[in-house]
Amino acid sequence: MVEQVLVEIDERRLLRRLDELAQRGTLPGGGIYRALYTPAWVAATELVTAWCKDAGLLTRRDQVGNVWGRMEGSRGGRAIVTGSHIDTVRGGGALDGGLGVVAGVEAVASLVARFGRPNRILECVAICEEEGSRFNTNFWGARAIADRLEPDEASRARDAEGVTLADAMRSVGLDPATAAQAVRRDIDTFVELHIEQGPILDESGGRLGVVRVIAGTAHLEVTVRGQADHAGAAAMERRRDALLGAAAMTLRVAELAREFGPPAVATVGTIAVEPAQVNVVPGLARFTVDARHSDNARRLELVAEIEKACKVIGRERELGVEVRTLRDRPPVSLNERTTDVLRRAARTAGIEPREMNSGAGHDTQILTAAAHTAMLFVPSIGGRSHRADEATAAEDVVLGARVLATSLHELAYT
Ligand SMILES: [Zn+2]
Image (cartoon, rainbow, N blue to C red):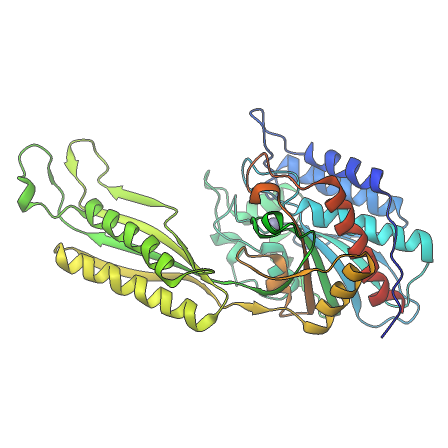
């Protein structure tokens, strides 16, 4: 086992740069919106590029807009990479994704400044998109790296205004026809620092977590068909109201997740009715379910129970029910040896890290297909995330960056 040295980083510059990044995409009412291929996104990627250049790294924007900063290693071989996503949800905070991007640049910059050329190729990356907040697709950046893009995806995915992902790429000088060339087959290890986005570390007084498993997700679309009717003339007992059926199903979905117990979660996040008129009984209702669990067998059971419950409720109310799977991602286990490097780095900093599962999805889960991966969490105050008041104590931000730099030192310099 290698003796680790705790790598110092420039704390003031780290915190200042987090603020600078947060100014790219600030909304008038508070919060940040830095959606893929928008002017705010472009400004953020330019900022990261400038920081990488400042650190003496070779910078490059790949075919989908991921920004890379690279220091060649004296032994060559496969690269050691750190980073996170630069896009945000609408009205999000400064740290989701941003922390891993800024701390990644800072960690690499500190290592290069202090120790010079690494043995292994060392890179930081700002991944272009993870959240799925603009287009009906997500993990666009990490999937490009991991060779998981679907053919023609860029011409099929659209934003709320009807702009295709392909046109949005062209608007920032990228060629959608070359998107698949962003693939990397030469990454050895990917390490991501991220805020927890949940309350576990904050409530337990923990300062660092290492992620063992990222929960699997299923997205379902449930269509409920009844009969549209006159809101005045149709008697209550004769109605086949699709929305009332969907409402009963929604309540049952949440109840089922509670019956399964943690870490099972299930959410009905969207619902639409037809014909959607104030004086018409809804003839059709369509809603989505997001169901997650870190144990795949339990996740599949939960999904099966949800589907069954919707059908039973449909039968009771004489409603037609169709359940379609939109997305099915099994849980992902991160690399044990790489995680162990993070554990030891945390201990070098005097902290025993908590072993955790992540309910939220992360770029790391996609990159697990392409590299050895590990993930480090710092606490989210009050478990708050995906909102403007998302926060982590400054000393935990600094600690996370220091432990990240220490891990990268072991991975790239020894
Ligand atoms: Zn994130």
